[in-house]
Every structure is written in C-alpha cells, then in structure tokens.
Length: 276
Ligand code: HPA
Image 1: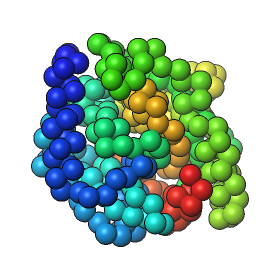
Image 2: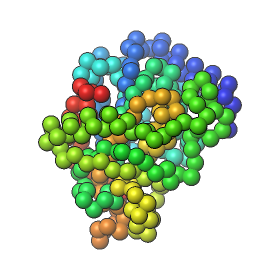
Image 3: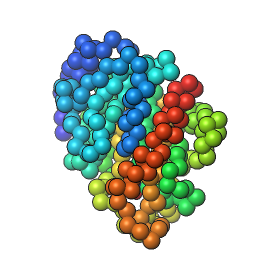
Image 4: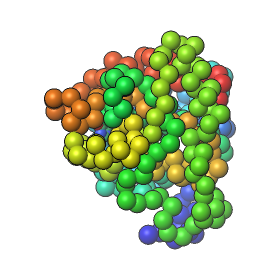
C-alpha cells in the first residue's frame, strides 16, 4: 500500500502533466461505461490524452474501452471525460481503479456523472432501460479509502448517506420524462466479477435490496464522495441478471444492448448537462 506522500506526489505529477497540455478547467467529470464511447464525439474544442501517456495512470485492458481522457466542451460546459475505465476484476487495486477520479479532483472537478452497463435484478426492468442509481451495495469486499487517509483530499470517515446526490437525481428523472425515457431509479450492487453472478447470488442481492448488478462504479463513487464531489450515476440495463430468464449471460449480449441504446443514452447525458 503506497504512502500518503507518495500518492500525493504522483497526483501532483499528473496534474502538472495535464495542465501543460490542456487549458480548460473542467468542473464536471464524466465516466463512460461500456458502449457509451460515442458521447465523446459530442465534445467541442477537444483535447485527448491517452491513459498510457499519463504518468502513473493504469492502462485499460477491456475490449471496447478506448482508454483516454477527453477534455473540451459539451453544451457549453467544460468537461473531462474518462473514455474507458479501470475495473477491479482486471487486477488493479482499488486505489488504482480510482486514481483517475483523484486526478479529476486535483484538476478542480466538483461534480461527476458515472455510467455503466448492468444486469437487471428488478423484474420491472427490461434490457435497454436506463436507471438512475439512488444508492449502492458495496459487495467488493474492499474499499478504495482503506489505508492512510489522504487528509488533504477528504475526511477519514466520509458520509455516504447521499452518495448519489438527491437533487441531481430529481433533475435527472425530470429530464428523462422530458426525453420520453421511462424514469427508473434503483440500487446498484457491485460484484467483483469477472464471472457473472450465479442465480443464487442474484436472489441474495434481490432480498438485500439491489435492483441492478455490475462490476464497476462503486469504487469511483466512494472516492468522489470522499473528495466532496456531487455524483449522478446511471445504469444501462444490458441484460436481465443470472437466473431470471432461461438463457445464459454473455458479454456479447451486454455489448449488443449497449450499442442499441447508445443514442438514447448519449442524448440523455447531453440533456443532463443543461441542468446539473
Ligand atoms: N452482472 C454483472 N455485471 C454486468 C452484468 C451482469 O449481469 N451486465 C452488465 N454488467
């Protein structure tokens, strides 16, 4: 586990590396999940930096993830976008997974939109639905804040009782209505993966209050809250979770649904930038 000093000096190098290349000062960060990459095409005055070129950044290994930070304007808002994220199942530590969120924090980001692909546990959901995350279950068995507290970045014991900002959720639900998207809210459970869940695990998560299940998001949201950011989370239900339908789960199904929904999802996130 790296020390507080070591972590802070790495972050400072990242901040300087980016400040030397990007003149914009984004206040809003956006993490794009599977199949949402096209959102980055909307960005004006774009500057992209590949993760592999940024000092201390982990490198994404998952197919369909571009692996770059995109800076620029959408709807006249200065944003920084993570096109491709890091997952715990790839073998990174929680601190590595959340390093880009820390980088956003030291660049001045105060609000974060997080998106993901998820399996639907709530039987009212259908593949293709967009769901506003209202809370989460951290089933990862680990926490990115474990270890010395980075006291310059946030408190030792951060509150998570409004981890998904309730005012932002309200605005997101009204934008959904405006766009003719069925408004849904749900609790997201994060499992470590990379195997999909068993039917028994899904029944367990359902009685525990979960509406969707996925393999991401929770580490980033914990760190964003520690850093004082407001967070909005959105899941795209790409499949029904294991055991709900008489069929096997596959990454191909997840990617197919994500592609089918991409335009609706991109339009929705663009609409959000007007109100968040
Ligand atoms: N389980 C876990 N992660 C996922 C799923 C799922 O069913 N669908 C998309 N990501």
